[in-house]
Amino acid sequence: MVADAKGIAQTEANKMIAKAKVEIDNQKVAALAEVKSQVANLSIEIAEKVLRNQLADKAKQEALVADLLKEVKLS
Image (tube, rainbow, N blue to C red; front, side):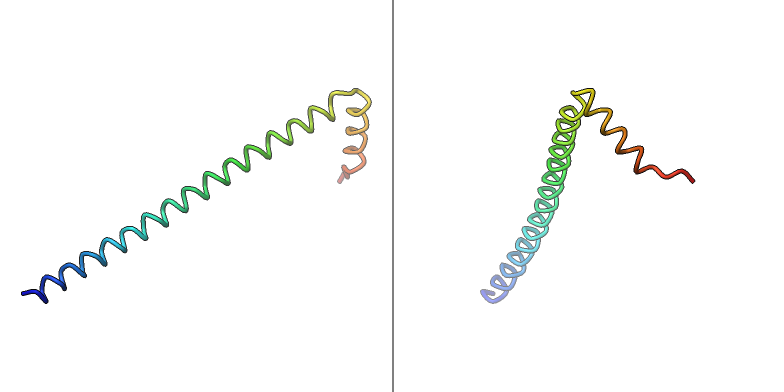
């Protein structure tokens, strides 16, 4: 009877451990997704600020357009 109780307890403990591991993995995936989202948002904000700075001056705008036109190849 004691051996059966130990066996049942061990089985339940194993189930709880497996469930905890799954939950940890799910939380890890969710955390990584959140970090990726935040990095993407920060990257966009930085790019926006750089572009605003670049395009604030008319001479810089014209230089940027000229450089971009040099890179364009007509087919």
